Length: 194
Image (tube, rainbow, N blue to C red; front, side, top):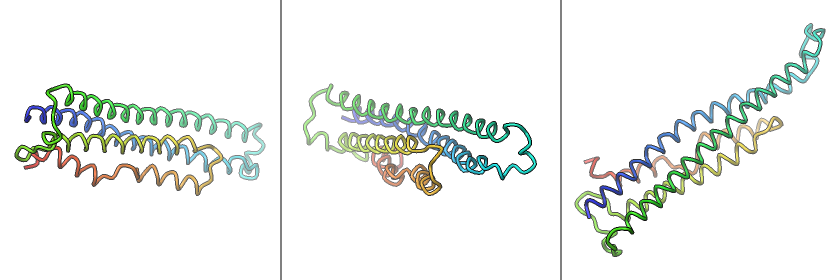
């Protein structure tokens, strides 16, 4: 039984490494979002002819500047969609880890419900590990869905209040409660904490 718990812990450890990538990707997405919203905020100013002063005499300056900003914005939008796709990859990886871990547990000798709840010393139960991994998988899948929706809603015509709300959702990551994630890891890796 102890060997099985250790193997399950190893699977969770690999899933934890994927979750570490998540945090890096979130920082990247926030940076991309900030760049995109800076351009979106600039567009109305660039479209007003009165804002060009003496530069109005330069042929097609307004059109060129707005065009360049729109090109940059489109490049950022593509980058954000690629980053969101990486979130999807991590969510799928966590789901695969859960599925593989469940199969590993079921693939061995048949365990009763009592054996799944059996705790050896400070090691977690197999049920605790599987439940924790399932919760982590669900959290990240829900957060991926939210990020995907938010990014798909961002356009060059987004209002400043919409942008503020979208940014707050991306920063907060409401589907991934940091204290809950930590408590899951505290249970699964309790033997390493002591």
